[in-house]
Image 1: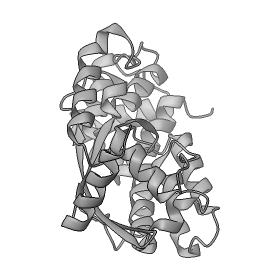
Image 2: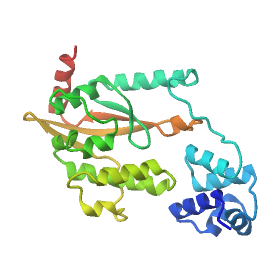
Image 3: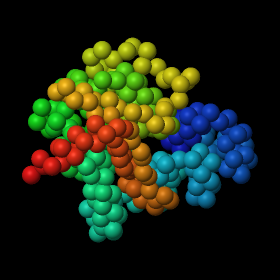
Image 4: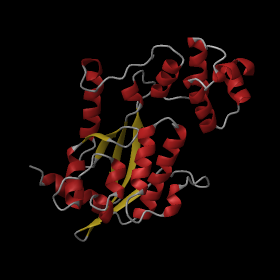
Length: 266
């Protein structure tokens, strides 16, 4: 008999969290025998037991829904678009946060680095770096890995791309069922001149909590560092996966260039 879907998911998540069956059972307040039966399909977990397992595994909301569905229950958390009335106040707050970051770039990004929104400063800086063109992508990783995008303007590309790669490996490792994240990993690894050893997760170096990006273009240099804002205790899958990345100038030369670009914005 093949293992049921919930058993497959639990084993994948236990491996990702480096938990034994006994470890997870203790964390979730279940007997190891019952957990073993759940994984093999000999026992049907209650909805409460699934929630306790999800808590013990620290699952994101999307994966909590998947675990519930795999156990035969309805998903618990809604996934609504930002343009729906229920999230109108959140949308206004996001727009305000992006606008307040002027004249420095700010982006609204999901967990796979897709850019869901940006302020005018982000567009101005991108066009400055791309000789007036808009980026061909709406994904931050593709921005930095594609030679036809921002990559050629990044003076410290190895450092920045290496850090992004560590974050991407961590995302794939943390969400083993996320096929889109795995596909993105394979895509960026296929770009030209990506070091072969980046295919393997670097276990010795954690992603840097703060990383500066240095751009050089037209004899000018821009130095930024970024902060990340997330939504506390979200009850919606969309909000759970979103973050706002706000860029700040590291020096006066960068600040002056950003103000210069803003003054020429029609």
